[in-house]
Length: 325
Image (cartoon, rainbow, N blue to C red):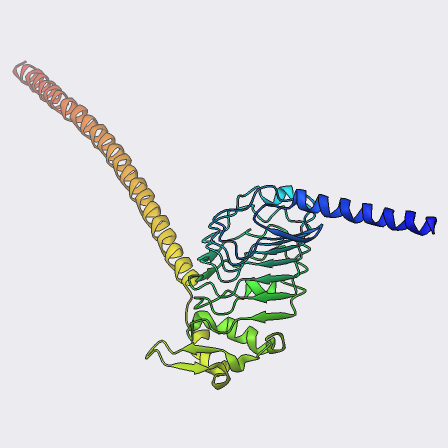
């Protein structure tokens, strides 16, 4: 009997120490069903609770009023793998907040007030497998490189947001993607949507509800149509149209050519002007030389004439003298 009693005492001591430790490390407003889980859901919190155990692995903060996450928050919890922040008041995620979550596998940011997902929001959370961003009614912009580095991401939820377009690069750079939810967004059937439509047709198996649950509005009359009624031919005119980037390139090229033409014209005009001045200077020198030469010749001719007349007079006088003799 005595060995059994000793064994039971040891178990009771162990359980009491575990319960005491759990109660001591658990925040006052939260519950901790196990040593590595902190559940603060539905507590009306307006900020993150204090005294969260550093070895927490599952942190549940759903259904509160938390407006922001400090940028250095996750740096303290290197063992965190599950973070639930759905249905709070988050309007943005500060740069670098999630870049230190190297072990994070599950992240839920759904049902918040996010407006955009900029580049580098998630850093390089290579362990992240499931990301929920749905039901953010003001989320209208997702950067092309918003999910860059999420090489293990398999499930992405972007349903029921305010997205009218989405760059295909945001999806194509996810090599492990298996499922994506995009239904319930106000997609617009314009040329910006054409590339996304082509991707959806080629990857319809990644849509849990297929393209049947997706609609887009016609720009001309605002009428919404199911994607099943569209085809690649519906966007045939977009192949001949120019994108904003193309227009900017054309405008910049035209400006560059105009600047080069103006500079070339100015250079040629300056060269011609200098040549004309040089030509006039040379011609003036030649004319002055000719005038100088003519002036010299003109001075010499009268002397010769006078000399000739004098010689003639002397000859005539000598002839008269010879005749008289």
